Amino acid sequence: GHSLGGAYCTLTYAEFLRQQAGTQFRHFVFGDMYSYGSPRVCLQPFATQVNSLTQAGGGKYVFRIVNRDDPVCTVPPRTVAQIPAYPFIHVGGAWRLAESGPQRMIQEPPPVDPQSVVDIIWNVKNHR
Image 1 (cartoon, rainbow, N blue to C red):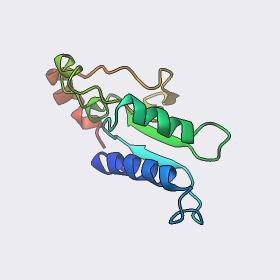
Image 2 (image 1 turned 90 degrees about the horizontal axis):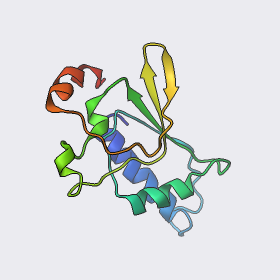
Image 3 (image 1 turned 60 degrees about the horizontal axis):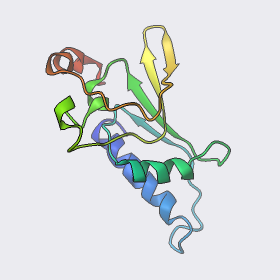
């Protein structure tokens, strides 16, 4: 999924994984999940649970793709002052598409570091 679709994709995939042991989904085989330009969608306990269900070697991976300095991937919160009220984070590992090629984002989950309004306006071109 892309943007809001990536957020929905993350939440839906996580719920499928959480319910996989149940009778409804026990015959389903879930592969990897890819999201592009997704905003932050969860709090730390949710991210910890999803990340534990998608550990390396478990056959299920979560990939987030970030195009350069896409501002959508840094919200919510919109400002640093809003961090206590909106402590949302990402799940899974991320790759940034840069001029020099794909780069693994080392610090995962990334720190909550929203862009300034000026940077959001300037970088909105990267949300594609």
